[in-house]
Image (cartoon, rainbow, N blue to C red; front, side, top):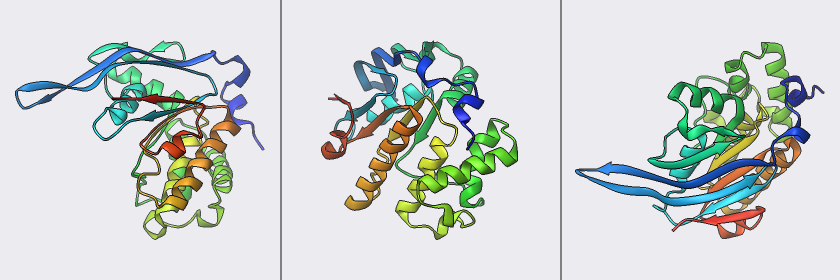
Length: 233
């Protein structure tokens, strides 16, 4: 089996001790003629290889925080550093490039591409990074084996169950072995048993690949499986 992290120039032992640093981050959004805080005065840090659960009720800014760390949005104030790079100060293009090379995102909704089969969906991040088709196909198949879906490689997303679709989304996020995985309520649409199975699968893959994980959730039981917890009010 190819050690993809070595092939792409990664060395788990040499990664910085601190993967994420969020310092007094705030995000304001316009609602009519007024501005309100979507996220207020948030600070924390996450070491390389650690897992962190972001807890809070609906409207406390969990998804906003995930988007800010991923570089999908810019904070109104404060600083966000990922892998020693000041993501909060990057241009839109630089943030997109940084995210492609370093971050995997798992959403509550799987966002699979319906016109592609399971294997092609999982290959997509590697093809975007211009990994050769034969290597991308092999690595996509290998991670689908890890999530127990190697027998579904030719199936279309519409034919899968909700739990299967989310496992494909996890495989897609993890296939490029990113340094950081961000998960926004990844089990929110699943029943209790499926939610636990999927969450434990995420933790297992993160551990296997030496990645760091930040997961937004309202589920205290699932959050307890992470190394650390951060509550948003």
